Length: 394
Image (cartoon, rainbow, N blue to C red):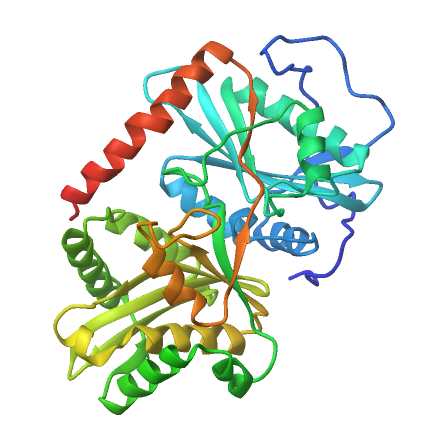
């Protein structure tokens, strides 16, 4: 694998992307070809090469990694990964997934936690616009959404997005995009330092679970994965939240755990499964993908939640990660005790995690009439369908 800190790419390593005709935000095709001098765009088709490029960009995220694109492919999306080159230097990278709308000749495009570019570098923007043109010609999108991991109050980045035709939308969360309000935890220091940063109540519950015999082990095979899924479905039914199908979990297992870039930790007590955490990583960034903590019955007596989270921290530290993304806070920004997920926020922040509020989702609209319908469906129909799924967990 390439050194993940290498910011350059040999021009001989990748084929050039043939620029498509220019496509404007309203869907009209123009005849303007890209200038002969300027950035060159290539589509990367090799896993290690792509991940090395992503990890060379500031603020990279698992959502831009090769493996996440493959997980999305299993869910019906088509991933594409592009690098923008100035000579042999990579000045931007973006992984984009396309979802064709059922029964329609249109699609939606999404760059989760992307693009990865220098926001003030017009060369990078020109390359990114070539990517947009290419995808627009291939897929007839209604809109192209981006959700970069950039602080929400970065006026310069918001201005750059606006100048290039992207408009912000107000949602803090949707049923299909990465959350904007998240918690992250730096892993600097040794285990003693990390444990010392835990909130007093978390340390107390951690010690109690260890004293009462709760144990955490690494999942070994598909049978363990199936048991974790069954536990998650049961918890979803009890608490009223939807659970994605087993096939999704299996895709994540293949993409990450089987390659050594993920771990499924299971909490047991006297042979009974009472919780688990599925964690993933890309380079030095770990992410909590799914957690199931049985809080009723034996799980409530043991206070076992902090134990498996702590073991995930230890795993991330052991494999060389310097940051954990704990995922969504379950709250608005700033958090309020009135938020439905305030307890989730309190629990995750107890490990020393800091709240992050990322840049609003931004859409580049190609077909305004259809976009209005799509946004109405996203705002009203999809949340209702999401809640309905909670009644149909299996």
